[in-house]
Length: 211
Image (cartoon, rainbow, N blue to C red):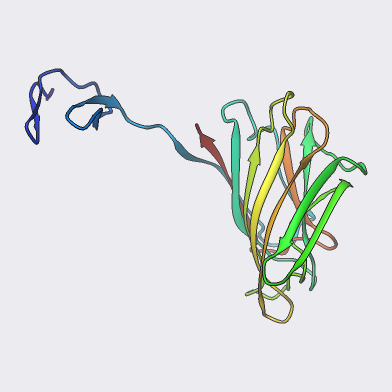
């Protein structure tokens, strides 16, 4: 049934709302029907490593499309071998960019004064200072933001927070940022360890960010 009259603390409206609209204060003394906010996250895909380990997890052009400007990856990775650090590479035409000098990054180990950085690297490093353990209760918990991947006029960048449990069962944290040095379209992202595979029961979920 259409709303023809709305009284909100003495504010009288007689117009008709459209489907999906909400009452919104437009000033200290006025309210109106407005379109509901469309901002938020849209779950695109969840990748779970089951059965056997895998070398890396890719999110390629199947999911990195013009539907969204920016993306978020959340999840948990466990290395198949003990004491490993996590890394990222971007993709062009669905192929990982692996050449030296392709990336620059900075990373801070929040439990100490340990920092690493490179202005010319073949990967982006996202955990250091201590190395992730491979026990069931260890590994890396990620939150990775992928920015501007489909713009050729701005560099593709990533920034991340990473909690991880090292091989001695001790909690560690990292805050990191990095990006592609060249201006180009990057239609994918790869997550992996410096050596060895990603263990079964690891999972990563990709979200599109609605502007």
